[in-house]
Amino acid sequence: MGLARSSGLLRQRCVPCEGGVPALTAEEAAGYLVELGAGWGIVDGQHLEQEYGFADFREALGFVNQVAEVAESEGHHPDILLGWGKVKILLWTYAAGGLTKNDFILAAKITQLSDRG
Image (cartoon, rainbow, N blue to C red; front, side, top):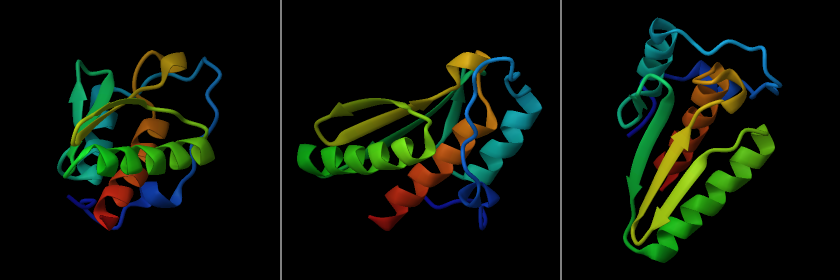
């Protein structure tokens, strides 16, 4: 899958969002989506979504555990749907009522995990 280019998002950290932070405009979100590269999509203009495939449940669960570690270190937590051989990640910033830069930072770091195999 890979990031579209050497992503500046990977070098950034999520910033705590307590509210009052506006959601990204559609144009801003589209710009960050290009930086993420293939795989991620914006749903209803408010959520980032990506689905990953794996050989079996154990492999999918291992990926979920890696995502959980990154999410904890960033202080930004996705919704994760785990099934046999698949994981779906949903990201948005509740306090902003939509997407923020934090969502794209975490998405880039999740993409990096998936690229490591």
